[in-house]
Image (cartoon, rainbow, N blue to C red; front, side, top):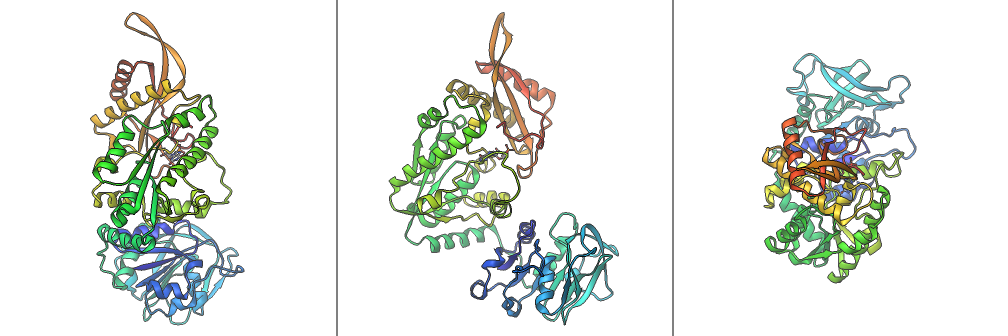
Length: 513
Ligand code: XMP
């Protein structure tokens, strides 16, 4: 295993990503959890010191234990990681003062060859991405300079005898176009074979879950989304019936969704599953509520209440399983207490573990979304299930602006089913990040046959996105839109007008509320 010691860079996750692409397994651990005992136990085959926002001069500056440099394994320091290495190994770091450098820069290689840079300098200089305030002013004994940039005389440094390398720039980001080569060389130098696979991850994760849980019981909130489903199947494979899933049906699900999820997990996977039908409760509490944040808060709170109530049926569970992914971990670490405003209160089961006195099992914490999908395939989940578009926790409540009524929900469910059917028929489902219908709180006049209609209007939404943080509307053809509008109006009583939402995010959001 390769150990990445995280000093808080926004892009540490990308280092992990680059390594996984090379089929090397790594784990990221925050600097303050890495001590001598941890290192001994982890026994890394190589270590990467990430970048970070601090200055080595700051009081209590993040530092690794000195023993990391005595493990006798290859080490690569990136940006702040480079400064840490120089600081700890006898070099010198100086404060910014006019030498800060952010953005594109060009590195020129020195005469001496460095294996780490093999195959990288295809031209005489290479574009890299810099982002640093302080800089190294004297390298540590044993190190040589292998590359410079106009503002970074020590852009690439290395001590070949110890296999220690340190670079000032960020090879993991997109703006260092050939940076992946540097990681490829580093892992080769460290003796990794590049034979890590998702199947190996599955075995490791199962062993880890067994060790963590022992003979205790685990409960898991199953939403039917990819993350919680993959987590549940993996944990079930590890500990069998010690796991019980709770599926909360809040009456805000899509057409056929509850049956689909329950059948799949209970019948196909033979998993103990509590199907909590709480439609009356949720829809009752939401009656007459039209403010989006109030809706979200009500649903979030009820979800926790209901989950807790049903968890009692399981009895003495000591663990709560969650499908937390790596980007979720990073977001909550980097941004909690940060200056960002709340656009929407996302619905999740946060707060539950403390409230119920449960410990967490989060077997997907190390993975990115596409890796979770791959793991899902590895576990035999049907491809159609794995490729499903994301569906928000508050469900149809936030696709029904204004007051929620059963009538509107029924119409919405039917219209959504037709729309998705159209998208599938035209082979567009996998090109789209997310597609759904929102039913609008307005009735409009139409004419059908020879009669007047006065029915709801709806909006179709379809976006492309990489991570849901930004999005663009999907450019359907006019033929597709026309055909879909005709089908919805003809097949669904209650809707007589269809619009297409062409707002990107930002300034819009993907969901309407
Ligand atoms: P927005 O509407 O904020 O949505 O652009 C971005 C992505 O997040 C999903 N979403 C949620 N997912 N709980 C969730 O699990 C929520 O409360 C929630 N709100 C929005 C949304 O569907 C989109 O994929």
